[in-house]
Length: 618
Image 1 (cartoon, helix red, strand yellow):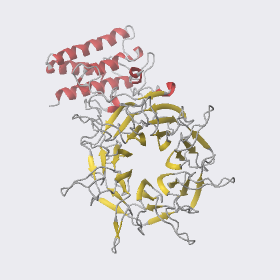
Image 2 (tube, helix red, strand yellow):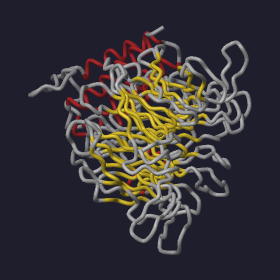
Image 3 (cartoon, helix red, strand yellow):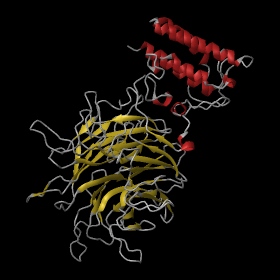
């Protein structure tokens, strides 16, 4: 099955321009957990490492991460929360008040520090971060949750009711505070935050979870059932309250929130996790299995319920949620983490699940490729088009995954994995270049195009990482790693969009990188429909002639005769150079071309051009 998933996407009798890989997982409900091949973890090496501008021990910088173009320069900026950071008000230090930091792309050297306008000790400002253009001015605004903040609604202080704050871009000096419309002590409003244009008015709306909120459906109070709230942009005064359709005590509805247009109607839908919800699949109640709910915009009254296809006790399905168009059909798909799911004998190994929009059919289960106990794979999830092929990748954090950097296994260092859309191949394996035990690398993941090259870069938090700036180690100061994506993930000289094996630099194991291997072009030619060839009297013979020329090229390369190989490639290129590089109305091949279908000709030609370029490069 793995070989099928890695196929070029060409089928006999049909030529499809672009040759995108077939999305076969949808048909089979696959469990995907492949090992990364050699070179697969090379996603921007080394990563950019971010630290708190003035590091402190135990501030857990990196507890939350997000991205957004705050200053409107076309580069994503990286937003990082440090929930235990101390804040100096001038009259003393408030421990645990918390801060958030915005590192400006593309170089991420300049940082803007954000604080609660009225700081409180132990408010945990920075526990969650997100971004969105709330006021519609073209600049992303920064949203920060402070779930432990005390609130005084004029009836007396409510401890740990929680707040969230919206800092308006580009200068981040104007702040809009948000609270539960009916504040409640211990509700932890602000634990997660997100944004999306729910009502389609061109302004992002702010989504805030209150994971420990008490809900009363009319039959009595249900403690820790949880709620989520949608504050409508641009002024954020209109509020929609969301609850589990069947509220439960202790369900933790609102532990995670996200948005995406699942049904393609132009309105963002709101996704909410409830990690401790009980599930009854028809065979009896499964306690704390967890659920996720998709509330359809614009009115959020229609709700789709998502569950683990095989619910497990205590799996925490819904611990993390995200969305992205993985299969490229124009509908956002929903990704759900279950970080305490048992996989085989491995307790708390964790899993993540993909549900395809628009009908949210369960499609695939993702797991840590190197399975171990308590990996907590699924602690965090995100998406982004890392390889620039038009399909969103699925990014999953495994906060206690074991890592081997080549010098021996580092226990529970943590990792993140990037599964490539549309077929979720790979994955790309990311970890701290200098992994340390229990660093919590992968506790938070996000993506954004930091350097403006058209590829989403991957952002990973490691909030227990120690930091040493020359004065001694600061325990659990925390770090964030930004892995810059590029056109060629496996470094084989073949751009991702043209590479049928984007994570395998030598897919046939012959010792020649795919970008310099005639076998790559030969595989494309062999898969073409016979109807694209000029000689319809003997199209198979013409195709075989091209394949024979490519075999001659490979023999020349293997024998070290690069000049001969280049001469043959240039002659072969003349047989596929009639159609223009850019598709044009009425285009046609030239009389001496061997391939007359212009789309097919262009694809073969670009591969030949890459072979020539890679063979002539130093």
